[in-house]
Length: 136
Image 1 (cartoon, rainbow, N blue to C red):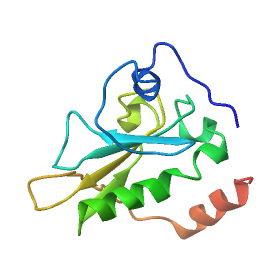
Image 2: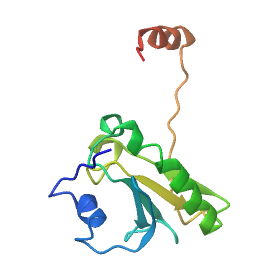
Image 3: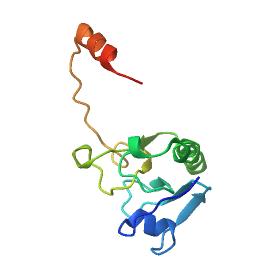
């Protein structure tokens, strides 16, 4: 399992120790640390030790550890309510072009992640049509 880093990526530089961070947990494929712009106390980032901008570009072996690490962080924080957030691309609010997962405690209405969810009524026939087109 070979790692891949990008010289101009802030997260790759954090993994390599070129930029300081407050490390929480590190495994063979994952590095986690506290966010320096937290939405709430304990807001952490879990990043694969492989440079890929979007999740579908990341080899599966570098994804396998991400959720168990996020789970350990949430448990260690004692967070009763929390969000696990992962964005892909600028339109989806990704700020750093390296796959990463946020663990964001939600201790009250004010702190943590606040989101809107503009749900729309779905046409079941269109859903079935879309599902039939998807190839896995």
